[in-house]
Amino acid sequence: GLTSLDMDFTGCKNLGDTGVEALGRGLAAAKSLTSLSMQFTLCLNLGDTGVVALARGLEAAKGLTSLMLWFGSCENLGDTGVVALGRGLEAAKSLTSLSMNFTRCLTLGDNGLVALGRGLEAAKGLASLDLVF
Image 1: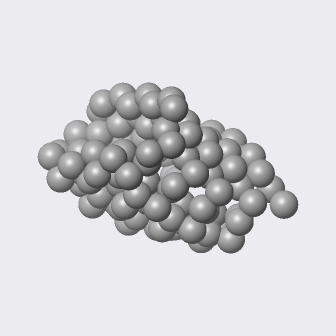
Image 2: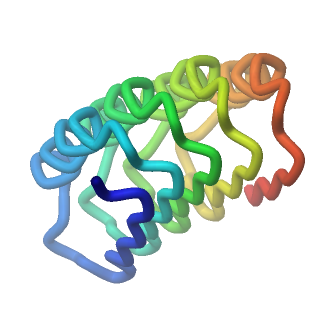
């Protein structure tokens, strides 16, 4: 099965929650996936609903060792989506490398960061971490 997936949606103005929800469902079915890279930088229509669904898919991808998610300038992404990502990290017991970018996510606040912190606490195997805000 598929072990590595790299998707770059940078600047996709029309990509929104519906498309990312479908990606989340697909991730949940990708049981052999070990490496995932997804760039959503400047996807201005992407918001919490899509990211919550994506996070649910990540929770099901138990074998992930490497994860890169970039949401730079996703102005509609806020605490609700990032809280779900934090929960996803808590379930990612195999994760050794993590890179996340939230540059210019203007509605992200304390609740999202607290949840990310909890997820990082649970990710005991992390050897490499890159977080950008």
